[in-house]
Length: 140
Image: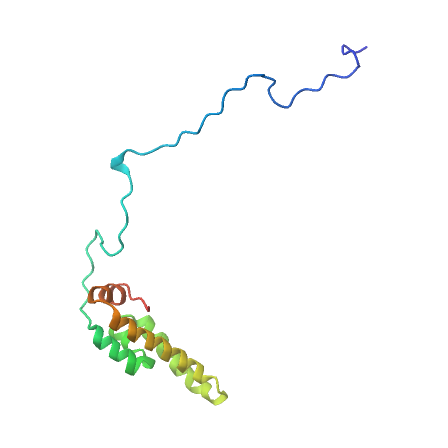
C-alpha cells in the first residue's frame, strides 16, 4: 500500500512557498568616476596631425566641375581619382549607348552631379572645402 492517503503524492508548488518573499530591489547601475567619462566627439578637431595635402582652390575646382565635369577633371584635380575615373567612364560608356537612345541618361546624370558639386564647392567655406573635398575626398 501507499504512504499517501489518496494513493498519489500531493502536487508541489512550482515556486517557493515562502509567504514573505524579499521586497523588490532596484538594480544598481555602475557609474564611472568623473575622470573616466566620455568626452563629446568633434569630427572637425582631430587630436592627431593632419597629413599635408597641397592646397586646392575651390574656385578652380568649381570651374572645372562646371565646364569639364563630364571628363572628371575636377576629381583628378582634387586628388580623388575614384570620382574622376567614375565620371569619365560613365561619360565614355554613354557615347555608344546614344545609338539606342539611352546614352543621354548617363550624360544627364553626370551633368546633374557636376552641377551640384559646383554649387557645393562655391558655397563651402575654405576650411570646410579643404576638409571635405581635399582631405576626405567626398563627392558631396
